[in-house]
Length: 192
Image (cartoon, rainbow, N blue to C red; front, side, top):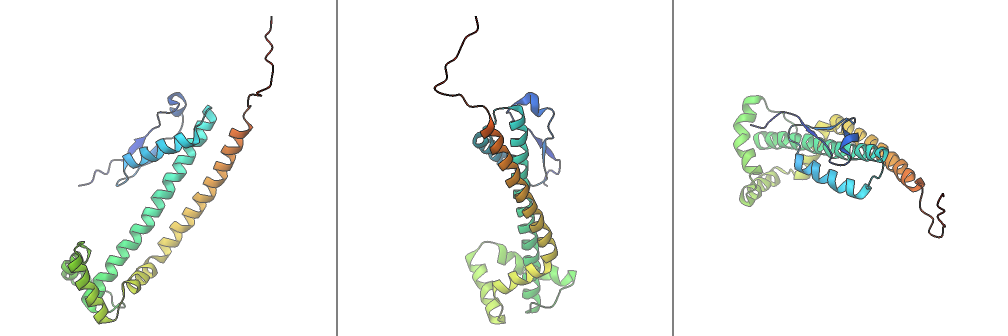
């Protein structure tokens, strides 16, 4: 059984500052190691040098993780609907008829065989679909159709997050570029 306890992930960069920043909370099913790898790679790439840069870098990383999260949710929604459509096709021989719970349960063995990863089972099911005049593409289209409202909502969120990320990254890069740079030919005067 999957542990449903939420995990809080923190950065090792600028720990005194990070005590005041909101922490990224991972949801059940999200991999802490994947988040840490992403966090580490992006912190290396962003290389924040000031506390404010660190705060913005943490926000950029949170936005990246939100993108990962929404893309996975969107893909999982389609997979769930695809499985339902496959179940209906196997049981009824058509794309258009929905099964009741009992019929779906009775068909579940064939569906599991289709998803088993066995090339033989998959080929057998694809042959069955072909006999019915149905392609996997049609099944996928039906799955998209059934989940379109949810998909559109996640696509809208993904686009919004991408826009926020681009703007924040642009601001971050401008801030880093404006930081005082040493002048190589300058003469340093010492006060006496």
